[in-house]
Length: 89
Image 1 (cartoon, rainbow, N blue to C red):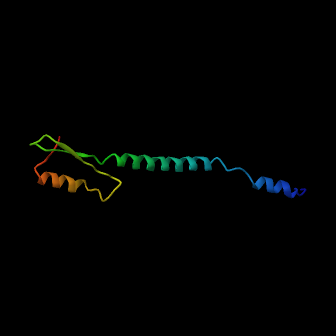
Image 2 (image 1 turned 90 degrees about the vertical axis):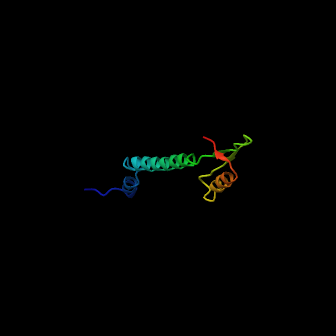
Image 3 (image 1 turned 60 degrees about the vertical axis):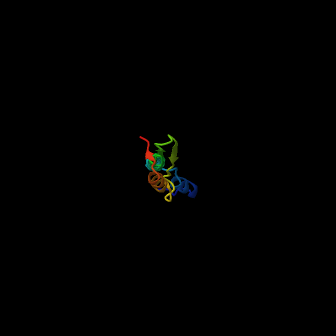
Protein backbone atom coordinates (compact mmCIF):
# COMPACT_ATOMS: atom_id res chain seq x y z
CA UNK A 1 0.00 0.00 0.00
CA UNK A 2 1.51 3.33 -1.00
CA UNK A 3 2.15 5.94 1.72
CA UNK A 4 -0.05 9.02 1.68
CA UNK A 5 1.47 12.44 1.55
CA UNK A 6 1.60 14.31 4.88
CA UNK A 7 -0.74 17.05 3.68
CA UNK A 8 -3.53 14.51 3.17
CA UNK A 9 -3.02 12.95 6.58
CA UNK A 10 -3.26 16.34 8.34
CA UNK A 11 -6.33 17.36 6.37
CA UNK A 12 -8.20 14.28 7.54
CA UNK A 13 -7.49 14.93 11.21
CA UNK A 14 -8.36 18.65 11.09
CA UNK A 15 -12.07 18.39 10.57
CA UNK A 16 -14.88 20.72 11.44
CA UNK A 17 -16.73 20.10 14.71
CA UNK A 18 -18.95 17.07 14.56
CA UNK A 19 -22.70 17.33 14.64
CA UNK A 20 -22.62 16.00 18.22
CA UNK A 21 -21.12 19.33 19.35
CA UNK A 22 -24.04 21.34 17.95
CA UNK A 23 -26.74 19.90 20.29
CA UNK A 24 -24.40 20.43 23.25
CA UNK A 25 -24.07 24.12 22.35
CA UNK A 26 -27.84 24.42 22.03
CA UNK A 27 -28.28 22.80 25.43
CA UNK A 28 -25.86 25.27 27.02
CA UNK A 29 -27.62 28.20 25.35
CA UNK A 30 -30.96 26.89 26.60
CA UNK A 31 -29.62 26.66 30.16
CA UNK A 32 -28.41 30.27 30.00
CA UNK A 33 -31.82 31.34 28.72
CA UNK A 34 -33.58 29.55 31.58
CA UNK A 35 -31.33 31.19 34.17
CA UNK A 36 -31.92 34.64 32.69
CA UNK A 37 -35.69 34.16 32.57
CA UNK A 38 -35.75 32.85 36.15
CA UNK A 39 -33.79 35.86 37.38
CA UNK A 40 -36.08 38.20 35.47
CA UNK A 41 -39.16 36.49 36.89
CA UNK A 42 -37.93 36.62 40.47
CA UNK A 43 -37.35 40.35 40.34
CA UNK A 44 -41.07 40.84 39.85
CA UNK A 45 -41.95 38.94 43.04
CA UNK A 46 -41.30 41.84 45.38
CA UNK A 47 -44.34 44.05 45.49
CA UNK A 48 -44.84 47.52 46.83
CA UNK A 49 -47.13 48.02 49.83
CA UNK A 50 -49.56 50.93 49.74
CA UNK A 51 -50.34 52.36 53.17
CA UNK A 52 -53.48 54.41 53.93
CA UNK A 53 -53.99 56.93 56.72
CA UNK A 54 -57.64 56.40 57.74
CA UNK A 55 -57.96 59.89 59.34
CA UNK A 56 -56.71 61.95 56.40
CA UNK A 57 -57.12 59.56 53.47
CA UNK A 58 -53.47 60.13 52.56
CA UNK A 59 -51.63 57.22 50.92
CA UNK A 60 -47.97 56.38 50.70
CA UNK A 61 -45.99 53.54 49.16
CA UNK A 62 -43.41 51.40 50.92
CA UNK A 63 -41.24 50.16 48.07
CA UNK A 64 -39.57 46.76 47.95
CA UNK A 65 -36.56 45.56 46.03
CA UNK A 66 -35.88 41.88 45.47
CA UNK A 67 -32.36 42.70 44.29
CA UNK A 68 -31.55 44.72 47.41
CA UNK A 69 -31.27 42.47 50.48
CA UNK A 70 -31.26 45.57 52.73
CA UNK A 71 -34.63 46.78 51.52
CA UNK A 72 -36.37 48.86 54.19
CA UNK A 73 -39.92 47.92 53.22
CA UNK A 74 -40.65 46.04 56.46
CA UNK A 75 -39.36 48.94 58.55
CA UNK A 76 -41.44 51.39 56.51
CA UNK A 77 -44.61 49.32 56.98
CA UNK A 78 -43.94 48.86 60.70
CA UNK A 79 -43.40 52.59 61.26
CA UNK A 80 -46.62 53.50 59.45
CA UNK A 81 -48.67 50.89 61.33
CA UNK A 82 -47.30 52.23 64.62
CA UNK A 83 -48.55 55.70 63.58
CA UNK A 84 -52.06 54.37 62.85
CA UNK A 85 -51.80 53.73 59.12
CA UNK A 86 -53.32 50.61 57.56
CA UNK A 87 -52.35 48.50 54.58
CA UNK A 88 -54.49 49.33 51.59
CA UNK A 89 -56.06 46.21 50.09
